[in-house]
Length: 335
Length: 285
Image (tube, rainbow over all chains, first blue to last red; front, top):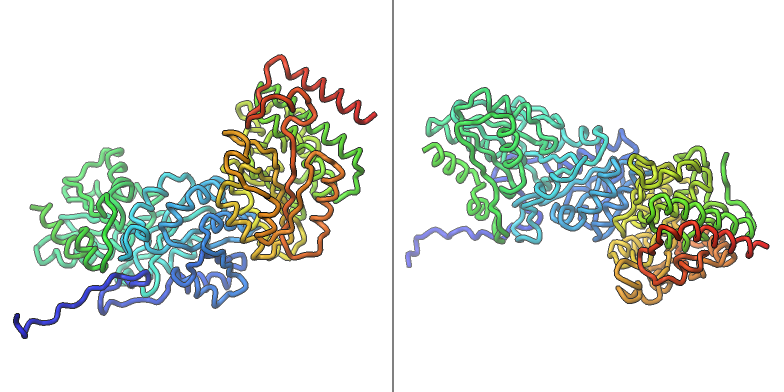
């Protein structure tokens, strides 16, 4: 055994509160909690409600700033949805928080019928979307978009970073109706302010252009796509990135125009979600339905399986959504 | 015009309950089907609700000052429509449209269809939780309205009911009154056999509620229970478990083999109404 071998870093299971930021990345603390607190100063009808996860969804910031407007509903996600519906019926705008797995898997019927079917103005903001915790399938919401996309009258937002979240919160509030937002919490990377970008609910935005590849992405995978696009230049590959933070209703017009403008590009849809039922399938249906056929079409997303526990960097590599993997897989598809 | 917690006497309440039963049978006849067994059973509860307990404006169903009445059990819509017709919220003529295409009176209650229908019930186990949110909202606004929630014994099997029950007590929602229609029937048989809940009132009490168990077809007992639930100076939410008889008021339906859905043959509707009329006339005489 060589005594000179450097100690291998011990990759520990990524906790619930693990940040998705890489070492040294610029971050903003609790952007959702601060944005909602600030908005509540001018909108007195906003209330916050959580199912025993205020601290883990950054709603505790709102709780600290507006203690009389915060409702701790206990570990009861069905109740969270029902009571949120009741609050909305009385003229308030409740912002409900829990983990994405619990909202999607456990409380679906309650969000569907008590809130969406009734057209109520309720916002559901859920942490740990996709693969953002190392705790295994009980906490990894790999299929939340697949579950929720079928719900009529539900707007679905998958923001990329702190900038997206800060800008999305007031617009989600102004949009009357049920909204589901996938929440990045804790120390959230800030990247989109480096681009000429403004969040607009319902709109996809081209962040950078490129002749060879078009990444169409949402959530944190937009960050990965931007990093990959930078690195692909070394291989003389020019990649465009179209960010689609609103999953539903999908900005089909912008997507079709982007693909149609340069049909010779390889389209790679990248999402922090199962390859089943998320952005990838939505984009494919939109392109096929409009007769817009790109030179190639590939999906980067989580496999259709229950995922392992462990450290996020390991798992993102294992399941093909790390920047390294995005670069490698894109190059392999280009041949 | 505001209808406000009147002191309507028992005899008049009984007449209203009879009218509610009659409207429900007429609607059942339109479709040749419907949950008339439940409507007949719960008519007395609805009469006390709409003619003694609730504050509302028949011509202005969304009036902010109203007490809220939630029908968690969407399939009881026929019963609530009958009460809303009797209360003057829905015109009597509309009864003929019950369950027809494009009617405002669909067979399962939905908020967007019908004036006076506060929520879309039917996915059982949702009403009480919505009532908790409305109770919290009303407390927030500092106004004194009550939220009533009508639910069923079968619905107690839904775990969400008990999330809401715990929460209502936790938040001391003394503005929330839930009525459990204990008719001991659900889709697959008697509720006590499908998923026995034991002493329902005791369960609510154990969750921190003020709970009463009453004969849900005894008008005097209902009046006393509703008055107490409203007037109680106590920070607990209130439950009234009303022991009712499906088909009440039409003896041949009362005696028919009980299931969730009482069968009424085509030629029996007129007879049911005649029997109801005769029974009421005899009782009132």
